Image 1 (cartoon, rainbow, N blue to C red):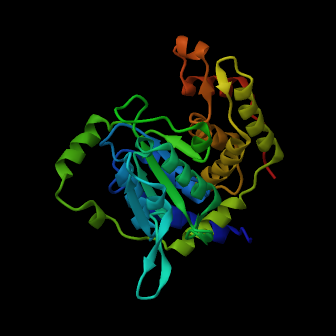
Image 2: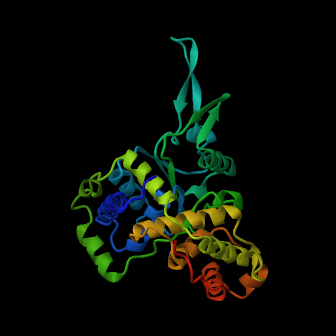
Image 3: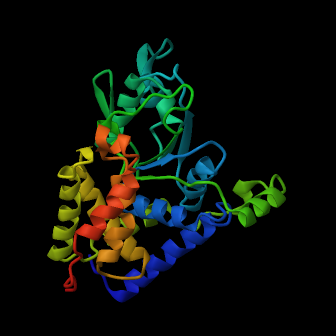
Amino acid sequence: MDLSMETIDMAQNAAKLVIDEVKKIVVGKDDCVEKAFAAIIAGGHILIEDVPGVGKTTLALAFSKVMGLDDNRVQFTPDVLPADILGFSMYKKEADMFEYMPGVVMCNLLLADEINRTSPKTQSALLEVMEEKRVTVDGVTREVPEPFIVMATQNPKGSAGTQLLPEAQLDRFMISMSMGYPDSEYEIEIAKNDRKVNDAEKIKPVIRCEQLTLLRKITENIFMHDNIYRYIVKLNRATRENSYIELGISPRGTIALAKLSKAKAFLQGRKYVIPEDVQAMYKDVGRHRIVLNTKARVSHVSEDALLDQIMTQIKAPVSYME
């Protein structure tokens, strides 16, 4: 693909319009908005772990409308079945045949609310379609629409009615982040504006689905020097050799970090990746992929603290330009 400055400038202007529009209703969470959009243009799925009421659902719905995507939302509860996710066949008497009834995954953006409240069987059904981007019902395989993005929210570990997602499913999410509570200034602004204007009416579509596909193709072609690839591998291998970590970042995590670093560079207005791009996304890629051992839990060491420590130990490359 031609990566002329004119092409990149047009794409970056479109990306800025998306981010600015989402920020109109997701107040005071600029870093979360930018990281979520980086994951979207990198072709990944997003997991948001946080307490209720901090804007997780608002973030997902805002991106859906701003990018002109067909979206569905499912509230996960223990009684949600795999058929609700993937779809099912229903017999039509007048036609004397079975007709496929689409599940909620047949959309561009699926908001999976409180994913850790449903059964492991239903979680597995979603895991499969996230990875394969297709569903098979009664022996017939159907592709989900392109692009296909899952933005899932989950309650913090230990909340009532929750069960941990298996490591294999967590690994399917490119990025994991927490929105956190707003600061006092923005919480006052939120309180003042509450219910005055419907959130959906505050924003408008600024790009089409086809333009998002183009942004993804441009992001894939951002230059990354071999020294940056080696740096990413060293960072991730360090998690597999750390005395506090039982399970380190997988090779899928290495791929995710490389793609997100390119997306970060693109959003920063560059045609090439620098070490700071990798460092900015490292914890968001890694924290849900590592499993701490008993030694870490007894010592009250967190995932973020360990990843910060690794970044200080691994020297960033000096040469990373074309």
